[in-house]
Structures are given as C-alpha cells and as structure tokens.
Length: 262
Ligand code: ADP
Ligand code: MG
Image (cartoon, rainbow, N blue to C red; front, side, top):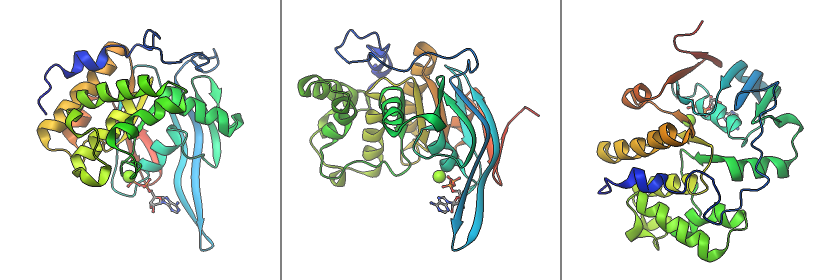
C-alpha cells in the first residue's frame, strides 16, 4: 500500500471536535464515578442451548479496559474470542453479569440506545467483513455517517478520504464482489474508522492482508491509539501484532485471563 503519509492524514479530523460537520452531539461520553473505565465487565457469562444441550462459552468474565488502552485478544480457534468481541461491541448480549460501557449499564439500555452507542462510539471490523454486497466500497464506508444524519455530500467526501487512507481510492466504485479479500478487509477497516470512534474492535483485522499491508494497517490503528487515545481491542493470532499492543487478554475454555496478571 503506497501511502506513507497515511497516518497523519488519517488522524486529521479524527478528534471528534466537530469541525467537520459530523454530528457528535448527544454522544454518551460521560463516565460515571462508579465505572471510571471505558469498559467494565463483571461476572459475564454466555451460553447457548443447542439441541437441548447447555453449551457454556464464556464464564465469569471480569475485565476492565480504560480509554486509550490497546489490547490483544488471543486464544485457540473456538475458544470464544469472537463471542467476547461481539459482547464488547454491543452486538450480542451476555446471559448474566454486568456490563458498563462509557458509564452505560448495557443490560438496561434500550435497543435504540445500544444502536446509538455503537454508531457513535464503536468502530467494528468483522472477521467476515459484513460489507453490503449491493453497495460500492464508497457507499459501504459512507453508511455509518448517513445513519448519523450526515449529509450525502459530506459522508461521501469523508468516506472517500478514508478509502484513500487505506490505499483504495481507485476502487471506490467497485462492489465487494469485485474486490480481493484483502481489499474488502481494507474497506471494512475504512468503514470502522470513518465515524471517528472512541473504540475500535477488530476481529483478525489483518488476517487477509499481505504482511506489508498488514503492517500499514496496524501502523494506522496504533497511531490513532497513541495520538488520539482511541481504544484498540484486537483479536489476533499474529504474535507480531500482539507484541505491539499493551495488554494481552487470553481466552481459554471459556475463561478470560490477562497475561501477566493473576
Ligand atoms: P473464536 O472466535 O475464538 O474462534 P467463537 O467465539 O466464534 O470462537 O465461538 C466460541 C464457541 O461458541 C464455539 O465453540 C462456537 O461453536 C460456539 N458458538 C458461537 N456462536 C454460537 C451460536 N450462535 N450457537 C451455538 N454455539 C455458538
Ligand atoms: Mg472468531
């Protein structure tokens, strides 16, 4: 990806200071004193009932993540990493425990409130991209902004800028089916970043990228973390990526434990 200047450009206007016409009013930014961290999980459990069988996926998960933390989530395939990330990203509700996100009690939030928090504060990169097949790369990236009520002109402009940052401006009008796996992944990353989220949750975000592109994407994410205190939570198998993150959270047999902590 030939965009050595990508980080500074990407960071431009990523402060949420509203000088770019993006509506950020009403964003749920206040941390209550009882839950000073950005993310607080207490006794979280997730299970499924499948064909009458009780499948326990996550047990008694306790985890605190502060604004500006960078965390890797590691574990064997099937250990529950995506389940944990989906819960953190408000895409899935746990069966028990307590979850506070930016001071919000997630169990007591309405679906509309959850959607607003997701739209305004969370950038999610799905393992399987989840791009809309009928929309161009540009429209996929612009979508979170149009959900926010940003004008078509403004959202397209910002989406194009974001596609430039991930080296895909020349593919803006391609549909996902006409892009390679790595290009789709970069569109998904651009869509996660375009709304200037305070948290980026990414499920194997570099899994389909060659090592140079993967490194560029990680450089961008880490620059956002370092310079804008964007919180990073990244599921990865790649030890080189995990090494670049401050915290390593291990998932094994439904138990979540932090490396280096009891
Ligand atoms: P990982 O991301 O670590 O590979 P997942 O979080 O995707 O693992 O899955 C953890 C476990 O939960 C797996 O055994 C998977 O089969 C199971 N699981 C995930 N989603 C469901 C579901 N909707 N119904 C039943 N079991 C599920
Ligand atoms: Mg997974």
